[in-house]
Length: 153
Image (cartoon, rainbow, N blue to C red; front, side, top):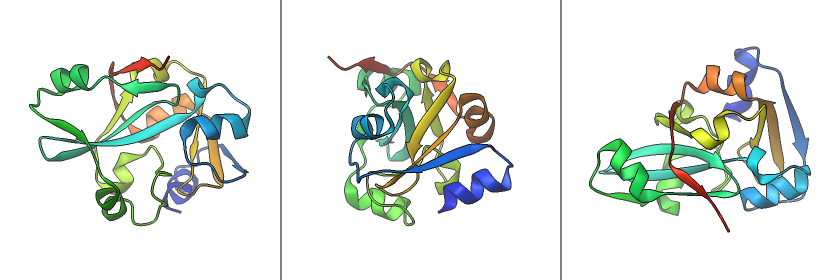
């Protein structure tokens, strides 16, 4: 797993846990017994043919209009499963870690997630999760912090 190698090589403290297979960020939150606000949900978008890794809380959705305006692009769409498979060759589809630099993608962090003390995210598969301090994540991922989400009802 590239993400574990990245964290280990940077000397970052993290905890890895195993759980039943999960296929949504909210399921990860339930398995890890935390609020969805602490689970980082990576969502890959294509904005005018350039891919971005958006990282937001599990309990939120992307505000595509806000993101389009902030990025100054004409068109935004979600990456499809084939594109995800090509971009994240070492990961199960839907279990991508929130480190775009591992895959040649710019990382965008939603402002609503940035103030949390820690984050939890899938480690490239549907059965394991990583918990790490938010400050360590920001220092390592070097994301561009933007406001681009809204809370799901």
